[in-house]
Every structure is written in C-alpha cells, then in structure tokens.
Length: 277
Image (tube, rainbow, N blue to C red; front, top):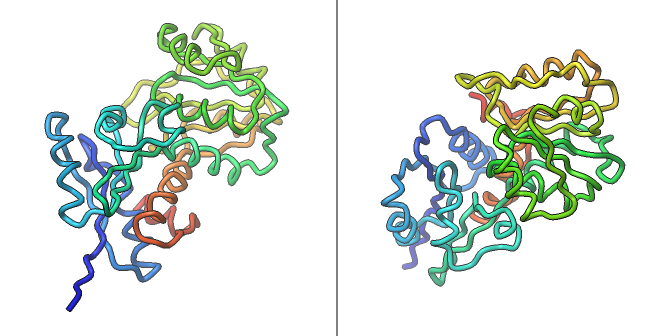
C-alpha cells in the first residue's frame, strides 16, 4: 500500500502574522480542488537553517521567505538561480526529492507582471524609470526593469550610500541622484516606482514633492497597505496611470505555487479578494 504525502508549503518570516500569503495560497488550493496546505511560520534568525533543513522531512515541498530572512537563506540553499544571485536575495524555496534546497527570487517577475497587468500601454524601452529606495525590493525591481529593456534607471534613496552600492552591482544603466533631487527626476520619468515603506500604514509619509507628476506617466507603489497610497492618489489626480502594490504580491506567488502543487494559479479578482480578506 502506497501512501501519498499531502504537499505542504508556507511562508517563513519574523514577524509573519500579518502575511497575506496564507489566504492567497489557501484560496488557490481550494478553488482548484488541490490537496495541500500553506502555513505561516514565525522563525527566529538563529533557528532558520535548522528549520529549513527539517521542513522537507515533514512533507514540505517548498516555502516562501520574507523579511528578515531573504538574504540569509542564500547561504543555506544548495542551488541558487541567476536572478536570485543578481538580486542577492531569495523569496521562494523549492525542496527537491533528493533533499536539495533550490532558491529563487520571483519578486522581479511579480513586479513586471503586475505592471503589465495594470499599465498595458507601458513600453519599457521608450523611457526612464525612477526608483525610490535602495533596499531588497529595489534590487528586484531594478533587475527586472533592466531585463525588460528600460534604457535608464534613476535611483534615489534617503541615504545615498545604499544607492551607490546598487549602482556598483548593476552598472551603467543605473544613475544615482540625491534624495533632494527626487522631485526633478520624478518629472522626467516615464515610470515612477516607490520601493520604500514610506506611505505604509504606521510608517512616515513619502516626503517627496509630487507636483511634477503629469499625464502619460505610469506610477506604481509596492506598498499595498493602504491600497491607495498618497503617492497613487496624487498620481491619479495628475492623470497618471496608477498600479497598486497588491498585484506584485499575487504575481510573485504564482511560480512557487506552480512548482509546489503542480498547477498554475490565476491572478484574478477572486485572488485579490482572498488576499485582502
């Protein structure tokens, strides 16, 4: 008698109770009639490697990784994709049947898919992109914009030194400007991306003058709590095409789910509702 193991997956972070991923993956599993479970796991830094090495023995087929462990898991994985290496962080782990741990980063993929969904007229090669912030999310965004063919990426961060570091890693296509110059850069960009947590519920506001925003620009915010950030509200008033951050969370989840549970889920209104529930 053979017994099939029910595939398990989940998201590892600390804190993790706020994560929308369990609702999203649970919705996909139920709506597609698949066996499997997806659970939140609050794991301290000191326990990370031991936990990850134990999960496959418990029937886990993979896991998502979020703050603050995205960089640390790179040291634990046996194989790392090129895009995860370029970004310097992983958000998706696949546990192979031979016991090896594969690490990937689907944040950039999720970002671009969300952008194409929400702004179908956006044409990467025709204009500059302004990226606000220089953290892990910015790395994924810059890698995916360069990959999509954006000719110049202007990068600005409150501490310039962090932006310079990204400039060293990504080279000629990235140009760093001072945070006080952000308003000028904003006016000239075809695409504006906020990768900072500024404007998020409980965080300070994004204090960049937004009066340079105008029709014809695409503006997207990685913050999705609130869904309509001050940046997106002002951009909409100025006649810009706006794309909220929730779609990135939905799209980045697709490749992992497909690898773990063997079916490709769709990002639709029901998936959005599930994530927001």
